[in-house]
Length: 362
Image (tube, rainbow, N blue to C red):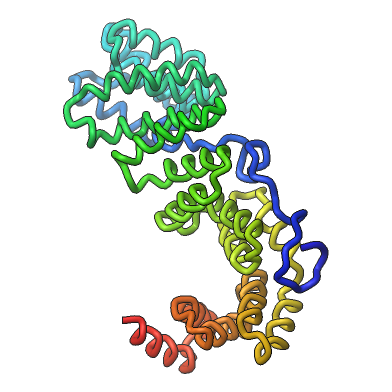
């Protein structure tokens, strides 16, 4: 659609691109969600855990406590442990992870490589090195670490239930997406999901791979799984909105864009921009009211767009509920009545409708 005309007929120029440079949520489709940025609290806790497990005394220094940040103190404590026991790979890994949390990546890499010199198959060191390589966009290097880890973890007992192995397949699949090896990405992401089926990050990256392979049906299927697992997933809702626009379903697109806009990170305006292109809520509401008798199905589409544009307008939400019920769209009607009741607490029309629809749904 162009301008502010209230219509459900889309125009191609309103459909945003989903190529790898156009994602409003950032240039990289993968999310390093398990391991690379360790919080200071976790680091400090790790010092205590490592010290207790290995029988070490945690290094303390009152002057450090006064003059240095928690991150610096954590690094100093762990560095002291490494100095006392330089041949313990685990200690170097903990020190490296503290350095990563403090953005000292070069120093962290040195410690991780030293850990591998001591223990060549140390999975934690290899994982951290792989994640650092991904963070730096060194995809071929990251691939070597993930491949090595698959060889190590894949031969372990109970490998099919090993969530660490699922993570590695996920990271390798993400790496292949960045390398534009999309079929390899699909294969590895499916392996990750065969171990950990409810991983929304893996399902999302699989949707990205299918998008790059130009298989929109499979992309849509994976995105729907993502929002089933994580209904507020901003990027997945945005992508589904793009697909809905391409299919000509402006009402569905508007609803997806609304969820994306409400849950987008600060500074990300693309979902709101897409909503703005659809016109105003008042225009769509007026269109819906004029079409109630002659074309109730189109009226429902129009009022759904109006509700997405102005979700706090109780009258609009009520009309969605009423029209959806007339169209025998029970679940949509029930959802709209529940939303209306949130906006108008205690409304008996809504409570009666919810009771009626809930009974019919059983």
